[in-house]
Length: 94
Image (cartoon, rainbow, N blue to C red; front, top):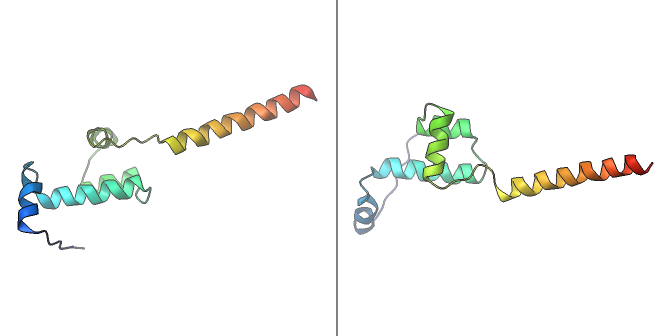
């Protein structure tokens, strides 16, 4: 699928000042946002961007300050640990 986006010339000049091709920058931005929203998996993001390996994807995500382990992941893990601790304590007291 091909998508066309119109950007005002003055903004395009600012956005292109980094030297990156705007179409690639737009594709990366879209992919990163969908990845952050968990609408794309790492594998799907790799396919979208043509990234060959998981290691290259990890480097790409690090360069764009995208953490794979989120605060929500931490909270979920912490809740699971507490649940196991509660079950262990119930068994010990029985």
